[in-house]
Image (cartoon, rainbow, N blue to C red):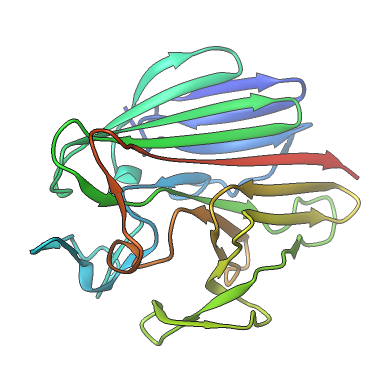
Length: 264
């Protein structure tokens, strides 16, 4: 199942969707040029039902304290769905819908739905979390690994964004709760953009790609040589404890990110 592979096409754009490998986007090619880092752990994976790290893997739901496995000791990181097998609910040439039923170690029943829709100049990812039973806190986000360099002797990618603040990061890699003036990179940091996420990646003389979302949180990670990550999400790291978003039978949690590109 982990090798299941769907390819969407629109114009000269192609997207690989891997339901059996965490519902991730395995590749995005524009005019034959691959924009995402390749490999089983890379591409762009959904972060759900939480984003980034949970301190000590614990979060509180009412009077109960829930413990998640420490897959990034001493913390739990990036949710559970990226390790699961997703089902294909619908598929056309340029669009597919995947579903994933939340299960252990996540303690609440629920369903995640992800829409992947391609046009000749954009990719739209929409995800929702629904419950028909108990309400629970959750987060949604995406973790794309964009290639730092597209090859052929071109320059490395440049990042441009104007956040209102940066979440101060403690020695444990989690926000301290203090908001500070944005600092220069390199980053493994969360930023606040109340008007919506808007980050531009430019590979000079090759391609410009804008990552946008109505959500106001984005994590930027550019400490690796091969790739840079721009991660729109519905709350900051450790957000199940600090900024919980409640999923109820009447109110699902939904988020969208759009990547739009132009040739230079």
